[in-house]
Length: 319
Length: 256
Image 1 (cartoon, one colour):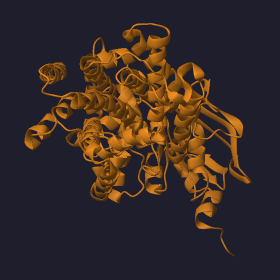
Image 2: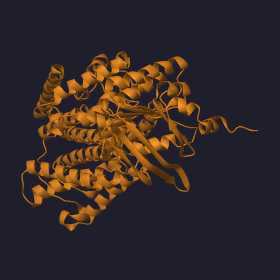
Image 3: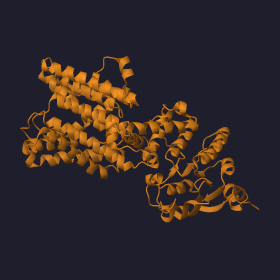
Image 4: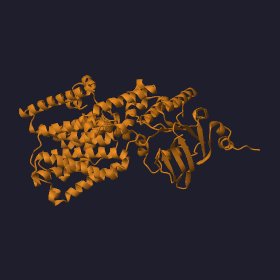
């Protein structure tokens, strides 16, 4: 099992190198503010995609209310720093715990539902969270919560992203992860293997929601503002699209999906009238030819990476 | 002999249908029991009640001194009862070895933090689980296919894998729902040997639902016969073979 530790170490070194490279380019101002923003956005989207993949891809519970947890994290974090004057670190922890706690409370009743019903319930839930926030004057209501200091730096968002990726990777490769996969594959059989299916479903849901909360704190502390319009169900679908595009159940897939889609929308920002058309056309083509997503539920391994080459570095490390 | 499972007068009602009615059975430690009956007699329903999938409307089930009727399926498994399914239910997108590893979840001794941080007992436990799973696969001649996806196995091997997976939970009582379904005579014969051998090796009791009379008569020590949800006979294979009601149930009444 030393091999496992060694490969983890290698991955961390590779992450550090990637970090140093990007950070260096940022310092030298070779990467301008527009792309810096997009790189931060990519990292946030990766956190969102892999955490949603934990729920949808690994545990097989089709949730589409991820933006709701993102909002909870964004607002809770902002309240901590703006209203209560706590440091950013505290905001991160509180935002994560708040979203996780909400995920736990919501998961208990809703995870009894299956398939479509769960999807509808979580969709409604995301909207309920948003509408609630819209009507709370304390956090600015419809005009949003403004004046949030920019605490999120590339370093913060990058290392938190790496932490989340490793967390979920290790989770998956443990008995806990195997139980979640078993539930996805066949819930009745999982039950007869002595797996308390509710417990594991709620566990995955809570963890996924918590990381969405982390992403929310990072999000609001980068863009100076937390606004209800950023957390509509369209945002949930964006995240879901990344996961499905990469392949449900594949972490490297989710990462690639997040990188790809964020890049595409950034490139197409100059052609706003064409953006959604090209975006949806890509999706249609992909779903026609590869309905299981880019990687299916396989992981992109170093070997595949070596053969394929030229892909975004982050995708290979995360395995 | 020590009593392992005691089923007292269980019945279950689905709407207006009394699927199983006042069924009782006893299984002692190490026994190999058969449960037979024509199609739709309620065999699988009885199985589902014993394993906690359904809750009996009446009656109670006592397993190893604990009342299990009303408990959930996973709790019953945790008490030491494992089963296979009539229509195979493997984790088809997982590898063969992962299918078996899942079953060790109840015995894993590391916590969530250890799993995430990869320290403490994580590596030792994972090594141990992999080793135990491989040993089990060897018994079922599946070790060469450990890394293949379960869905890619041929039918007979899927059946064997399902039994291996059930054994991995460490049961005291193993329930097999039509393990020979879809097997050819040669495979059935091998399965018979395997079932006998499993019982000796793992020191457990087995309850078997089967349509293949050769298999049931060949391996079982006692047989219960169900028809229309009622237990119409129980006894040794010889007694069952000559029981008039059983013959009627299977072949129909004699017309004079």
